[in-house]
Image: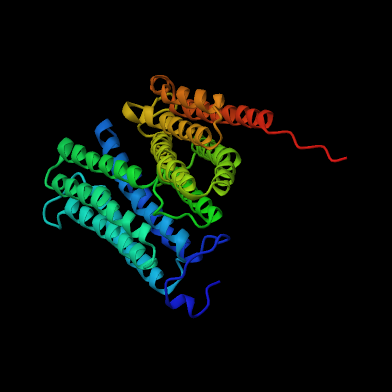
Amino acid sequence: MATRGERSRIVPTEGDHRVTPAELFFDLVFVYAITQVTALMAADPTALRLLGGGVVLALLWWCWCCFAWLGNVVRADSGAVFGVLVAVMAVVMVVSLTVPDVYEDAPGGLPVPLVFVLCYGAVRVLHLVTYWMSAPDDLALRTTLRRTALLSVAPPFALLLAGSAFSGLTQILLWFGAVAVDYFGIYLVGGGSGWRVASPGHFSERHGLIVIIALGESIVAIGVGVSGFVLTWPVLGAAAVGLLVVAGLWRVYFGQVSAAAEHRLAGLGGDDRIRFARDVYTFLHLPLVGGIVLTALGMKKVLKQIADTAHYDLSEPLHGVVAWALPGGVGVFLAAAAAILLRTAGQRSVPLIAGGALCLCAGVVVAAIPALVALVVLAGVVAGVLVLEERRAADTKPAQPQVS
């Protein structure tokens, strides 16, 4: 608990620092932002729109990651930092409001793509300025911040501004280029000695919470899918099965991935710790969240299709890219989990790799079978992967020494 004096200034964290209520409050705005990304893709479920939704999610993820790193080295509930967090929340709220129309700017209002880009730029600048103020004597950090501004903020922002003047494929490709430049820039400067991870426990817990937020959005998608329709037995069954899928993903992450990654992070020091945090948490957690968002899109469409009994029957399959999004989202999640375990302990998880590959290729099957059956089969696949992965983890766990 921060003292009265600490709450009025920027306060460094310590090794046992944990997530503060201020950070939980900060995450609330990202609940809405992630929901808006799903709505963006659901309004026009095409391959191009899914790519555009992924670009928006990657930009939002960067906004969140910036302050996850910052909150690990300075207390988020200290006066100055908390004031910045509230300001960023207000800006991200504006960003969230623009997401559904960011690729279809309606006439008569503000230029939505430009508002999105300007707000995104404001978040990145606030992050760099606050980091700069947090450690006035840390020359290595200040060097890294200057390199980040030159390589990972200014060029992507220019591409985003250029893209906001276009629409359709051109806009999405320019914004995708901005994301690629941004991530490559962070990769170049993110392994240096300027960044800090003061508390491994806080860093792991922080990312676990954003995974829970994304999983919660999947549960919301189930409810949104049946909103306004008559409650029937198939709807109840589909909702229950959808929840089982979400529970399986939760178990994969928190039962197999999260603790191992935190333990590895705590065992590293110096630049090795920074590189591991960058690779596992900043980079590989993005496809985890992206996979959950795709799964939420698929479940939303499944529940809506089953509930809309006036136009569909139970033999109707999913169509188009949604048929690929439902299992594909799970596949992306499982593949990202396998990549995290490989980076963490050098372990190749055959169940996660095989399950991920199967789900990524399952769209052709999902498009040919009833939607409810596809959801049930997906739940079975997730359960099977989970059982096999837990068995594999138990077999590879080092034996405990015997105490005589």
